Image (cartoon, rainbow, N blue to C red; front, side):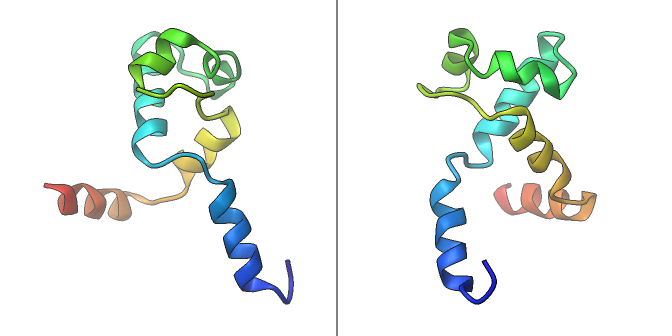
Length: 86
């Protein structure tokens, strides 16, 4: 929203329902189960077993959310986040 940066920021923050842990777990479990393509997540996000594995009782991240998650950072950012947690 042009002209309303604070309002826009609040709307975006309020609409985000995932932390970093859940999409990462979701993606890794799906790959381990043989679901490499992101489009598989449109069906997998409703899978109760995967929701249980990710410790989430609601729908998991959609394919588009996971795509944004995977493409939001470069290697340096990823390495610095990992180093901070260790």
